[in-house]
Length: 263
Image 1 (cartoon, one colour):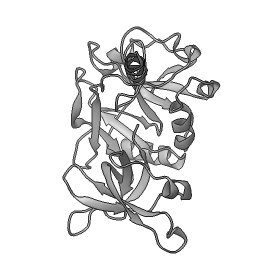
Image 2 (spheres, rainbow, N blue to C red; image 1 turned 60 degrees about the vertical axis):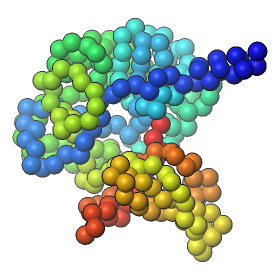
Image 3 (cartoon, rainbow, N blue to C red; image 1 turned 180 degrees about the horizontal axis):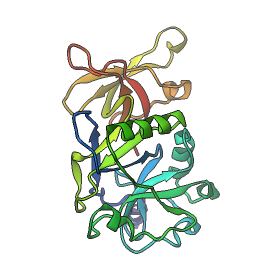
Image 4 (cartoon, rainbow, N blue to C red; image 1 turned 180 degrees about the vertical axis):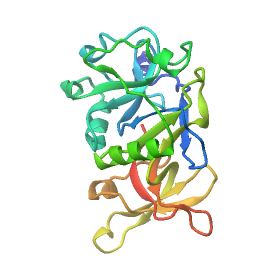
């Protein structure tokens, strides 16, 4: 009986990992004229399956009834967000195990309608906005200068960056060069495989985390970790996002900086 109860408790916390579209990095050689650009919100990505909000990894968020009561029965893909530069607070709100009033500070910002027909704008027209459900504004790119000015404006306001997409395509999943993230720096994800002990003031905590990238390269990331994260770092096997500034002569990310754990 206890095993049955435990099974249902676990199944209520996790769902099948959703198949989503993912972003590649923008290359200035790519011609994105007539594509659509939008602000890349620095929140927590969430997939709405018609009943529940689910993370990229398949975790079911404990969204309160008042937050999702006007959500549609069809699928949505977007970002749980409050304001620029507020990722830690957003993450804290959505990752609590029980529904709570903190969700009143969030909105669910839609950039895709999975498995819907038509081009990007036609798919987004299927979204009926409410108090907690918004659609991220899509702007047609005139030329590279237009994109550059938009990116500069977003970053000057404290935003993370910009997303550019070929809006003429039907819905698809996976990662390709028809959906790109544009930033003044590059970022990637990697899996934590170990830790390096700190020195000096950090001798009793983590000095850096050891990470494995998709290409099997191993890198150490120390910058960007605060004191709390050094004492209680993301667990082995966790996927994190880091930023960097170009590549070394050996092809490794230069000056990697921890940003956040992926949820």
